[in-house]
Image 1 (cartoon, rainbow, N blue to C red):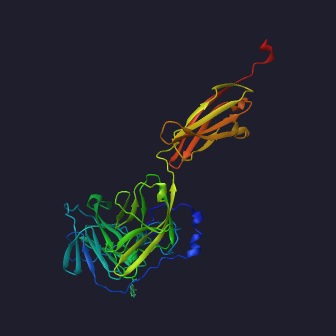
Image 2: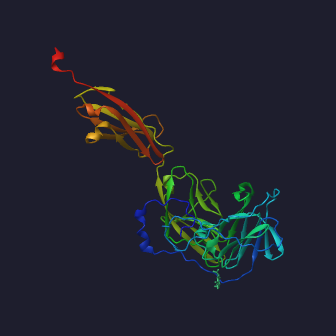
Length: 409
Ligand SMILES: *[C@@H]1O[C@H](CO)[C@@H](O)[C@H](O)[C@H]1NC(C)=O
C-alpha cells in the first residue's frame, strides 16, 4: 500500500512494469515485546473509571489502491462523545513519555518506539479525538484501540511494525451538550518512529511509484524511514549516481522524505532512496519521476469573429487564442449555433511563438463556417483548457439576409 499517498499517480500505462519485478512490500511483524510506552499528551494521571467509547464506523470509499487490501471496515478514529462537559481551562499541552507506568518523561515532536512494542498515548480532554497515520486508519487489524476515560483519552497500538511510523495527533473537543467540535489550536501531534531491525523504510506495496514533476511545484519523494537514526541518501538509477541534496534545490526531512522544490526537466527519471544504519543498507521503492510542463494558471482565451454581422452565404471565421507558457498544451472546444442542425465542426488549430524574450507561445483555434445560413446566427463559445483549468469566452454573430435580385439594381 502506498501509505503516503499524497502524490498523484500519473501514467497507468507503465503499471505493467510491475509484473517484471514483482512487488508486495513486506510487512514484518517484529517479535512481540510488550514494554509499554506511554505518552502523556497533557497531565492526565488520574485513574478514572474505564469508559469504553464505542467508536462509530466511518464511511469509506472503496479502496482501489494496490497493495494490502482488506474487506474489513476501517476502524474509526472518531470518538463521538455523548457526555455533557464544561469547557476545560486552557491546558498547557506538552508530551511526556513513560517507560514504566508512573514514570514520565517529557518528549518533543518525535519519539521512537521499538517495533513490536506497544504504543500508548494519553491526551487530556473530555473527550478527545485522535488521528492516526492513513495506513492505520484504513486497516489496523484490530491492533488499535481508543478509550475515553474521565479526564483523558488513551490510544493504544499493539504489535507495532515499522509500517506504523507516522504522525499521531490528539484533538481536545469542545462540547456544548452533545454538540462537539475539535479544538484545533490545542491539537497535540507527535511523530512516532517504530525502528524495525529488518526494515529501514516504511514498506510500500508497490515496487515503484510514478510521480508527476510539475514545473516549479514542490514534489515529495516519500521514502519514509522507520528510524530517525538512519542515514538517507538519494540516488539516480541511470546513470547510477548519488543525487546531491543541498537543502535548497532538494532537501530531506526525516519525517517526510526528499522534496524537490522547483522541478525542472533534468530531475525526471528513476530515483530511489538508500538508508543505512549500522551494517544494514536498504533501498526504497523506486520513484518514476515524470516531468510535466505545468502552467501557472488556467488559460485566458480571447475570442473574435471575422464580423459580428455576416450576410447569408458568406463565410465566417471565429478565432479563439491563448497566449501562455511555451510547451504547455491548450485544448480548445467549441459550441456554436449550427451544432443543432448537425453542421460539422471545422477548425484550424495552430501554435506560434510569441516574440519578446520570455518563452511564450500563442495557441489558436479558428472555427470556419462556410456559406453562413440563418441557423448560424447566435452565440459562439470557445473553451480553452490546460492542466490548471478551463475558461470559456463567447461572442455573438448576426446573420443578415441576402439582398434579393430586385433590390440589386
Ligand atoms: C499480537 O501478537 C500476539 C503474538 O503474535 C498475538 O497473539 C496477538 O493476537 C496479537 N494481537 C493483536 C491485537 O493483533
